[in-house]
Image (cartoon, rainbow, N blue to C red; front, side):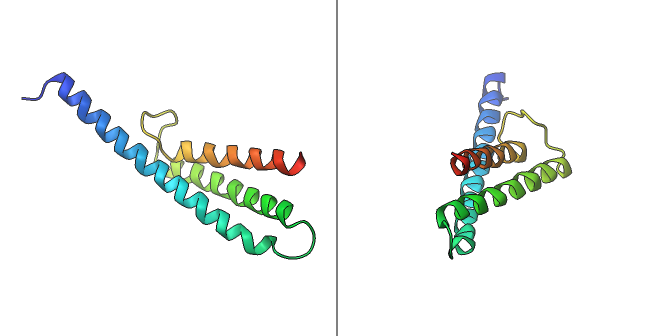
Length: 104
C-alpha cells in the first residue's frame, strides 16, 4: 500500500518529467526557428535587423499556434507541469525581447 507521501513523490516526478519534456521541446523548436530565420535575412540592407524581425515573426506564429494547440488539448493555464500555454508565453516573450532589440 502506497502512502500519501509516496503518491505525492510519484506525482512530483511525473510533473518534473512532463516539464522537462516541454522545456526540451521549446528549446529544440526555438533553435529550429532560429535556423529558419537565417536564409531570409541574407541579402541587402541590415541582415541582423532583418534576422531579428524574421525570428520575431516566427515567434509570433509559434505563440499563436501553441495557444491554439493548448485550447484543442484542453490544457489549463497555470498547471503544475509546463504545457503549451507556457510555451506560447515563452515565444511571446522572446518576440517582445527581439522587438525591443530591433527598435532599440
